[in-house]
Length: 458
Ligand code: ARG
Image (cartoon, rainbow, N blue to C red; front, top):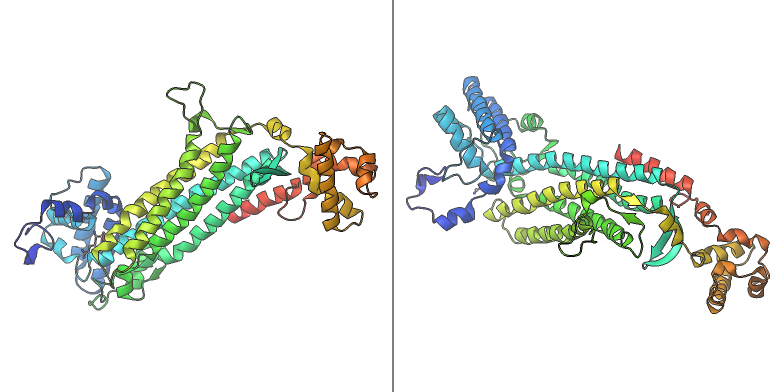
C-alpha cells in the first residue's frame, strides 16, 4: 500500500477486484502524451513560483521526455499499483530521476490534471475528425460535379415524387455534413479551456503560478475561470457525444438511401468490393455491410451520450470518481467517428452509379406537378391546376396509358388552356432545369451548391 501515491494514511490492502474496478490506466493510457506534455508545462510554470529551480525543472522535463519515449516505443512497464496514466507516469518519473520528481505535483491534483489531459486529447482528435469530415464533403462535391447530368427520381414517403439530379441528392447529404462541420468547429472554444492550476478544487496556492502562460504553453485558447467548475466540468465530453450523435444520424440517413438504391429492385448504385461483404451460404450475395454499420453505429453513440448524461446527473460539486466514467464513451465515440467518416468517404469515392437505371425509373406521372405548373403559366390559379392535373392522372390510369400519352384533345376536355406546347412538359431534363432558384436541382443551381460547400469547408 505504501507504494501507492496516496498510500500515506493507509495500512490495509486494496481488494483486488476494487483495484480492477477503480483503475483507469487500461484505457486512459492513450492520453500518455498529453499527460507528459501537461506535466512538462506544469514544471515550467512551477519555476515561476519558485517551487522548482531551473535545474530541477530541466531534470523533470527531460525525465518526462524519457517516460514518453518508453510509451512511444511500447517499452513502458506498467506496475501493479499503477492506477491511471497520471500515477503511472509520476511513478516512473521518480524511478528515473529520483526524489526531485516528488516536487512536480506541488499544488496540482489529478483533478485538474485529468481534465487538462482530456481536453488536450480531445482538441487533437477534433482536429483529425474535422479533416475527415472535410475529406468526406469534398469527395461528395467532386462526385456531384462529375455526375451532375445523371437524373433520377426524387422520393417523398419513398414514393416517386419529382425528377431530380443524382448530384442534388448527394449534396443534400453533404449539406448536413457541412452543418456538422460548423457545429464541430463551434465546440473548440469550449473544449480549449485550461483546468490546470485549479488544484483539487479550491485553486492553486502558490503565488506566481501564471495560468495564462500555462495555457499558451499548452495551446489552450482560454483559462478556466472557476476552479470548482474546472475540475468537474465535463460538458465538453457531453457536447462531443451530442455532436457525434447527430452526425451519426446523418451518416445513417445517407447509408439508408444508398442501401435502398443498391437493391436489385432499384439498381441505381453498386458498392465497390472494398466496402461490401459476401454471404457464407448464398454465393450471389454482395451485402452493403459498410452502410449497415454506418447506420447501426448511430444507436451506439446515442447510447453513450445518454449513458454519460445519466452518470453526470446528481453528482455533487467538484471531483467525484463518477467522472472517470467520461473516458470510455468519449474514446469509443472518437474512434467510431473517425472510422465512420473514413468508411463513408471510402464508400463515396468508390461506388458505381447506373444512370440508365435511374433514368428508366423516371415515369411521366412524376411530372404531374409540372403539368399543373404549365397551366399556372397560362394564368390559372394553382389550386385549380392541381385539380386539373389530378384529373389527367386519373384519366391516364383509367385508360391505362402513361400520363404523357394523353392526346391534346383528351387534355382539352379537362381544360381549354392546354395547347400544343404541353409536349415540352414531358421532358425530364426541362423539369429539373426549371428548378433554378437557389438550392434547386437545375444544373446551374447544383453547381452553385458545389461552390458554396467548397467555400464552407475551407
Ligand atoms: N483516473 C481519474 C479519472 O479518470 C483521475 C482523477 C482521480 N482523482 C482523484 N482524486 N481520485 O477521473
